[in-house]
Image (tube, rainbow, N blue to C red):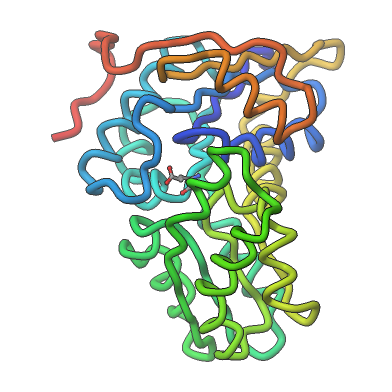
Length: 277
Ligand code: DGL
């Protein structure tokens, strides 16, 4: 048993979809969530920068005594998952593997679409994992404006639908029957994405699947919160305004984020951590 919080992070509000799923599956667990809003969006940035920002956030979470790290960001998972697993003593859960497993068990015609940020799609993290199976045909598309929409709190306007149509038409034409939402911001646009792809296409997102992985790792590591634990949720952001993050998180999540505190990453000296060259 371990009542320490789980550390969860994303570049912004996208990882809240994963935090929400963890809370639903593990209602006694506490968490600390960091949105790295000072460096958001990660998608268009060089992989080396995303790797550095992400490790700085994870260092900050480890310094706060978390018992597990959840990289609730596909771009960061593609950029630094192996580094993170080597660097920290606590278990590290990411979002790509769980979504890949679900996509494989969902598809009926073997044609899978993947959408994500420029960084995630360019890294080929999804394509490489899926294409190990020669019976699968994978079609990938970067959808950079989707994160901009979500970070602006815009999820259901005609403009969202128009842009979704533009990005997704090639995948629909490729006759995919399963579409992986390979960015944790995208579940907030599920309505538009589902509408454009049509009812025959199953949408797979990382949130529930990743929460399932968190559950398994907590059980296997004997890290579950004790039976009488009451959960505590802490929300932090690295950007200039805690109020902006609070307002946006509440708009997207339904008034559950009561307060956000600002933190600065990249300033902590943790001599016990292994240097990543
Ligand atoms: N939510 C993130 C992801 O899953 C990052 C989006 C971004 O910052 O560009 O990739």
